[in-house]
Amino acid sequence: MMNINPDYITNYLNKINTQLDSSIQPNNNKKSTIVFAISLKSKKVSRNWDVVQLQLAKTLKSILNNTEQNFRIMVAGHEKPTINELSNSKVTWISVNFPISRSNVGMSNDKMKKRKVIAQYLSKEGYSGYFMPLDADDWVHFRFVEYLNKSPLSKAYIFNKGIMSNLKRNEIWLISNFYKHCGSCSVFYFENNELPNAIETTGGIFHVLTLTSHPKIIQNLKMYKVKYKLIDLPFIFRVYGYGDNNLTIKGKLTMDLSAANYNTFGTPINNEIYHQFKVN
Image (tube, rainbow, N blue to C red; front, side, top):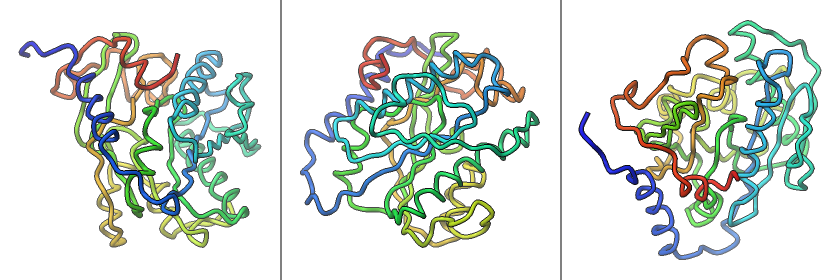
């Protein structure tokens, strides 16, 4: 592969700041709360619980350090981590007690079931607003909530570009069609009556958009005739290479994953990346 500017991702991230700095703040009445919905895997299926807790802490930090604060974070799991971030008033912990499965299918079902538990909690509250499924190890750019506030209300936002990483290799790369490679790839606006009111509920728009395969999200949106906006700014940082990612545990992803696997260019992680995602 040809040489590439090692700062190309940083330069791309600066487009976020340039665009937001030039945006006109909309009427406050257009703002909607966003709920970041995080399913945390059980300690019993993790390889290293301390590492899982550390990754969750970084995910929560990246959100909590956002420039605008009209958001909530809801984390559903079997065992509550002992991290300071969970005591923040923006964070709600939801305990679950359904059986734990160590199979590949069981792990996927576990994530979806916890996501539905969060939605059920919101349904009972009477919540209507944005809902973003977020993996417990991905990072959110510190101006993402601000971006949503400065954008017209939309039924769905889909991330077309994002940052992938392998922490073991100290490598990051920018990819297109991000929604095909990462579950933390979409934000949906749900009216309260579109949220499931019981854990057993199946079908409906919530089920199709949030509990089915994320690479098919565009197809599903078109099927439901839902208008959506593609986001070409890399607001999400996908974390691999720390050894306890679900795809690694399932054997579907090796610890040697690199930009070359995506036919693109990788670059080392620099301090500016950590600044943009506020995880330190």
